[in-house]
Length: 429
Image (cartoon, rainbow, N blue to C red):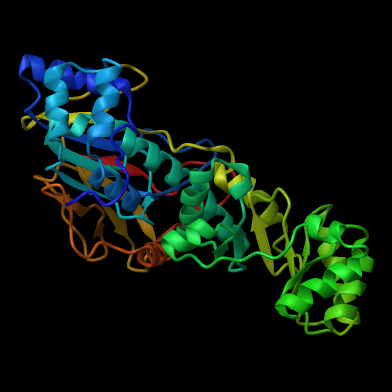
């Protein structure tokens, strides 16, 4: 595949090129190897995780090319010797990748992604693969908890001002994958086709000589099916002014501060008294999955979530690792006490009851699969063959649907926000 985007070759770690140079020098660089991405445990308090970022990983591998600019940088800084530099000039990943598709649930030890190729061409991908999967999976996992807590009410992703500008785009994608309805990030809308939404900030209200003038300006420009921010001064007066300006057909009001549960109840009563029974109530302001769950009984129609989702709601990384598990067909494994790994290439299946409820995840050697029952499902799929993405890979919309089905399959205990064991056990064979 031709490179289609900016080179990703230097989005890596110096030590990967150190290993590469040494392996080229001692003759071990061409040994057939299998690397596996997995998480030893879920973040504290989590009962499941959601795979995100797979499609971005495949794009990044496709763009992992050392152009003249990258080679010049490595030469001038003496990161590698001349022989390694020459090898990198011709680098093209030609191996195979398989793994869990985006939107799939995962648990401790799940073989989320497997990369097979020569040691040289696979080892240099470690940091690239992990940086994408750890970020996107952390955001998707947090967003899924929020979507579950919202019980079907839409959530707007609006965290672009709380993270790195490029991370904001990836976070918007991961949140949408996990069930968020829209994003405020226009680049995410352009790049991934995610619906975008946005109205005004308090600055717009303060710009005008009165709240009424600000509301009239907004309604005149975008119509009555808009959302008016009513908490700049006094919420009750703001609501009264909003309905006087827009009429009872106003689309929504937004409350961004205070005890939003209490304020939402009072707002609903006031809106109904003013005849605006169909005007929706949107709340925002430092919400996370716990706050959303606490608002479940309140008359809230939609949520705006920013900081907590783009930072993984307290778990900004999924703690995934990229470990060598096989060399020339021979299983290898790290044996240190607190960071042990299981050797050998792996696959996995998920067992289900006839009702569709998940029972167990079984991890096994591909050459010795367990008996697969009528309701069981093999999880990994082919992602790249011969260095090229396979045809017909699942889309972002496919991932959203997969996650919806996966969440329904979890035992009800697995959906709790309280601390506990993973929603289903993992068995290693």
